Structure formats: C-alpha cells, structure tokens
Length: 489
Image 1 (cartoon, rainbow, N blue to C red):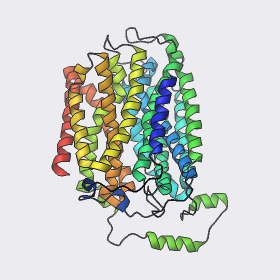
Image 2 (image 1 turned 135 degrees about the horizontal axis):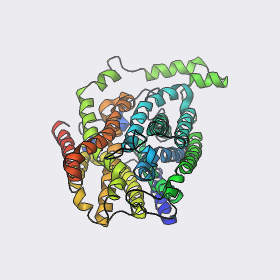
Image 3 (image 1 turned 135 degrees about the vertical axis):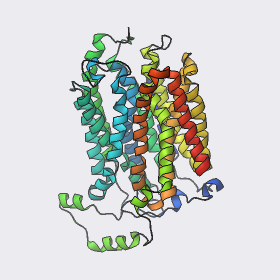
Image 4 (image 1 turned 180 degrees about the vertical axis):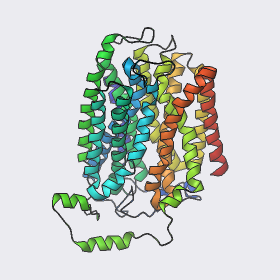
C-alpha cells in the first residue's frame, strides 16, 4: 500500500509545484483564436468562481498554498464517490435491489453513483449562493459535514431507498455545496494561474478513489476472499456497516480540516452579510458602494437564463451527455463486469484496477486534458478525447479477454472521463464569460444525466445483445459527440 500512496502524493505534489511563481508564458495562438482566454474574462466579484482581486498576486502566498492544500483535501472527500464501482461488490444482498427480497438482472444499486451526481448538480448552485452570505470557509464546512454524515448514516440503511437518501442524496448535496469553494479561493490567491489552480485541486478528486479503494478493500475484505457464485463470505457483509462509519468519520475530518483553510487573501473587498450578522460584526458601507460601482455589469450583458437557453449551451450539454456516459458507466460497473469473467474474478486484482484507474486515469486525465486544452484549444483536445474514447469503448469487450489489456483500457476510459470533467468548466468560462460560474452549475446536469443514462442503457441492452451491444452503443455516443464538436464548434 505504501508505494501506491507515495505515487498518489507525488502526483498531487507535482501538480501543486506547477503553481510556483514563474514568468508569464506566451499563450498559444490556437487558444487566442476566436475565443477569449480565461484571463481575459471580466467577472463581477459577487458571482465569479475565479479571482475577486486584481491580476497582481499577494506578495506572501504561504496561506494561499495552504488554501490549495485544503482544496485538495475537500476534493479527496468529494471524489470518494468514484469508489462506488469497487464498493458495490461488497454491498449486502438486501441493498442491491429496490425490493429487499432481491431481483434479477443488473443490480439497481448501479444507480447509486448516478444519484450522487444528480444530487451534486442540485447542490452546486446552492454553494455560490451560500458563499455570498457566509463566505467560502463556512460554506465548505457545511458541505463537509453533509458529506461525512451522509456516508455515516448510510451504515444504518436497511433498504436501497434508505441507502440512496443518505449515501447518494445527502452526500451528493454536500459535494455540490463544497465543490466550488476551493476554486473560488484559489483563484483569488492566484489570479494569473486559474487553470493550474483548478487542475491541481481537481486532481485530488480524481486521486480519491486510488486511496479509498485500497483502504475500503483492506477494511471490508482483509483476507482477500473472492466471490463464489457471485457472493462473498458472510464475514464481508458483516464488516459493511463498520466500513461506512469509518469512512464517514475520515471524510468529516479530512474535508472539515480542508474547509478551515479556505481563507480569502488579505484585503479581499467582499462582504458576507449573514456571517457578519451571526458574528456580530459589520464594516463600513463606503467600500461596498465603491465595489458595487466597480463590479456593475454592462447594461447589455446577457442574463444567465438567456445563456442557459441558448443554442451554445444545448450543444455543450449534449456533448457532455454523449461523451461522459462511457467513462461514468465503466467507473460504476468495471468490477461487476470483471467478477462475471472467470479470468478476471479476483477481488485483489479488480481492486487494483480501480485504484490505478483513479490515480492514472481519473486524476491524471483531469490534469492532462485540462492543461492540453489551455495550450491547444478545446476543439482539438475534445476531438482527440472522444475519438480515442470511442475506439477503446468499441473494443472494450475484446480488450477484457486479458488482465493486462482490461486494466489498461479501464484506466484509459477513466483517463478520458477525467478529461471531460476538466475541460468543460474552462470552456464554459470561455463561451459564457462573466456568467460562466452560474452557467456551469446548470451545464453540470449533463454529467448527472450521463451517469443515469449508462446503467439504464446497460440494463435495456444487456437483455438484447449482451455486453458487446452495450459497448457498441456507448462507442457510437462518443462518436456522435465527436461529430458535434467538429461540425458545430
């Protein structure tokens, strides 16, 4: 375990080192052509997820680096949702189907990840609203408590519905509330390095499953027992409630400490009315008037609602839906699929696949594709991603005939999934400018529906043509997203 954890820490430290002060680099012409860069977007302080300060960074950024570390800690907790592809194999029988008596076909519990993402997309608009009143630290603390308590309460569930309400809904809402706070604070500390800040923080979300898959497997199945006739020994199910309580406690501690580090730079001219009221403090009205004058939007600026109902929004939403469904489906079902294949049915091996897919796939993909899109542009990078993803998805069944190729293809599909999550936020800012943060809260629903679409498609198609048909349809959806990008962007 120690070497794997060391690799994860090395990746995160490497991402953080990219934030070290450096000379400004000349932007790629492909980025500048036709679209404003993130740095060129002028955003009102009250609504922006990025900088609330000018372009000059504070002279002492030590607290800023701690805020980034706290952001990684928060996202390590948020990213534990991707452990579900591993955890579902240990789920007690009464929690696998909506009917506690059981069922046939793919388990209904495959929808747990989809419900987490749907809840996250519901909570994402709430986070910025709370931040305007309470500030990023208190808002992140609220989200951290929701995440940890959701997992802890799920240990007492006796039906799948009860489990979903706590593990998916409460946890997912907490993810949505806390998710954007590190980006907001990091952007204020490092206004000239917003893309790197986002990549460093969000890599924590991708690396989470690497760490927690290993921890969870050791806690719930310490002897490395394998399934026999699709069932683990009773001792594994007996360790399920203690596992969730342990993870819930770790998540609260980890994310709450990260939330405490979410501090604005000195002199940030933003007021938090409700927090001031609760704390019994107040500031003079003069700075607020000056701020309001400076941040006032242009009279002809488009509204968030008009942009959400625009053709550009619809195009990006459909591209997310058709592209992200492949990676999200594999993330939640790779272990279920593997345990049905005699040559792959090893709990230790499949847990290793999940861990490597998290660090070498999801985490690395977020940082790689996010950086590449800043350099070569969204269209070129997204075209490459969807093309390679579609080819891998189409051949996934054949690649799964051998352990090595199954591992590599699973890692690569999660590498592409991480790229989807990394590239679309920045593209949203490029396309929608000052309203980018608010618009992305709505655009994120594409990921939620993609997570829901995967299990529903799988259930319907497995009965008609088995896994080959499932993977062919998912590959075609990726190809459709590729076509939308090349034809309309």
